[in-house]
Length: 596
Image (cartoon, rainbow, N blue to C red; front, side, top):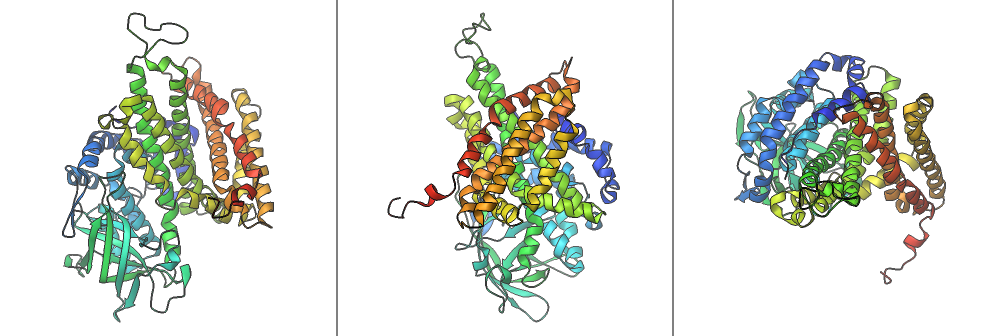
């Protein structure tokens, strides 16, 4: 397996040449005071060294050793504690955190690149900083000043880590039926009792304290999701002077035995009257959770890109070195017994498909991160509201489409290896196993599709979709005279029109047919994702094509040629998806239960 190397050249291209991130940061005063192009470049460089040199070498051993549970205590794989200290000492835990409490205040457009490197290098490990960042985000947005001052500095510093406790054995997507209870103690604190499952890094030995954000219901809470509150429940009580006190009444009951990400601790957490504090308002816990959900769901999409990038790097190296048979056009290396498998069209199909999704996905994740930055930091109310609408619309696409294509890329990379891809030592089978969870947690991809189609598109009667439509249409119109884009704008416009027509079609169907949304949702999200990546590739061609001629590095010319492949072989999938959506729900709902 190739040693993972952070794709810094491509990340710089996306940030600086495609999206002009420095100009975006300069337009946001709260961002501009923390980052400039030189700082951003230094962060990328150092992140590449740490992820490639420290985290990636632990990936396979972490998978083979896994975490160990012993009487409620969890020990991490060899090397994880030391790697965690490296992350902590470098300040990486607080990279995007609020500077008021010790965070570095970096924009999501930059943080997303670090997250991709970390997830590509070692997804199981990368989940620990990711969950802490999510907990910090929710606490910073909704916690009282006292809670923020007491907990955020040590969480940003990584001395304490964070965990999100949502799911229960009987309640996954339907959080309204959770049973965990929170009883007021009369002193401002609450006693939290219940069991949570699938809690990533809910217990471990890397940090001094673990701060759990737990969804629970107060005694007089309304039924359903409107009766959920959010509570901060530390593993160890924190004294007034900030020192650690007694252990709280919570414990890890067991670790899940799972398909992948075995280096991370997926815990069953038991709360037995554990002391906690309300975060935000009573019965408004879901609102607090959704504050961080857009960031976390983009983060999971980035995991998909990271796994796909690692798969592409290994498959590309293998295709250059493995010799099998001769090229269809004749021997390319006659001095050898056979040619490298890169000469074969089907191997190129797989590698180019992976490259199209990885590089297009990286651009799309940065595009979504851009809107997150504007929605969080802009002082312009109209601009901020516009960005919030884009974030709401694009988040389910980022989470689901990027992880679906991420798994596809991991499987294609495995296929390039042939039989060796099925063997443990090459690392491809681990990528397939690890990437699989990204389609499931933080809301399954089917739920993401329902969110996109039902709540965001049909629910807004197309208003949110119009924000994206205006952006794409504006790009097409503004670049209609660009000779470099001539071959790309027409098929992009056709795919975009197809998406718009299908959007209107489903909105109309949904008015009379309750099954219309669910029947269309997954295909619609794929159609949306393929079109969105087509838009990203057009933007990349605009940046790369003028520099492609005479490009001795092959970077810019390779970009343009990969874009051509995407438009020739991947974007046309939108035709079949649109036809499937237009067929409606009748055939899907026709079978009786017995006929299955």
